[in-house]
Amino acid sequence: MNRKPKILIVEDEAAIRTGLIDVLVYHGFDTDDADDGKVGLNKALTGKYDLILLDVMLPGMDGFEICNRIRDVDREQAIIMLTAKTSDEDIIQGLRLGADDYVAKPFSVAQLVLRIQAVLRRSKIGIEEAGTLQLGNLMVDTRNLAATRGDESISFTRREMDILQYLYINTDRPISREELLTKLWGYARNLDLETRTVDIHIAKLRRKIETDPANPNYLITVRGAGYRLLVE
Ligand code: CA
Image 1 (cartoon, helix red, strand yellow):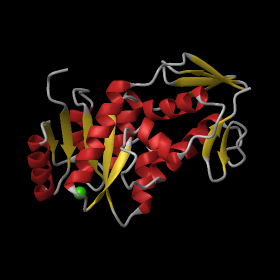
Image 2: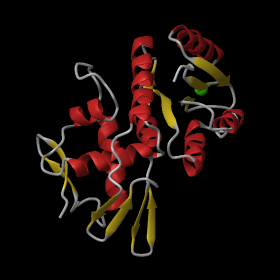
Image 3: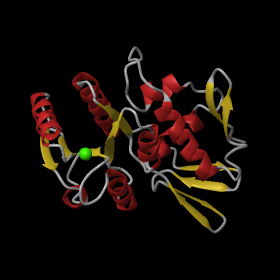
Image 4: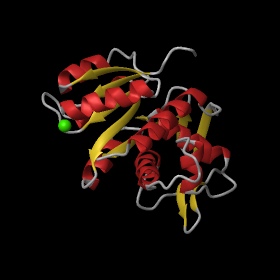
């Protein structure tokens, strides 16, 4: 792929928006931008962006709603939320609604660019599709990001499915948060990263695949070691 990755910036604060455009163009990205939530959503839904940088507080429609609406129709779209550093709730909410990652404001340019590059690298690599996974009475169709349990149908984001497949392939051992961050998010091992992103994705997966998410039968925590998927 020789074309430049195209990033949509949805941010209403002009100084931040133009700063982001400058930085991203400097680092070899093409950009487009919106200063209003509804305009941002309409642009995002064209599906022509490699990644969307999404602010939370926006006029017209907030970033959570935009993320939710994008995920309704596109579970592959790479999305990074721009959250307030002081707001844990924003971070958790953004990830729950299907953002791939978040960058807390005020952010360092280096950190932001690393995260964008990691998410883009990840969405190009993909991990080997396992096809169909069975967890008890849950049948997972990895290619269609979907699962069924009896009459119930469940949908996954690309990121959730990648985690599930990675744990499935490595069912013989617990997988640390750091390993998930390096293998699936594409982060360098020596980066000092918060691991909450992983935990929130695991919590989302449990709500989808476990009948009792508080007492998981499949996606278990191995104290001091990480997460393990038990496959019969
Ligand atoms: Ca804002």
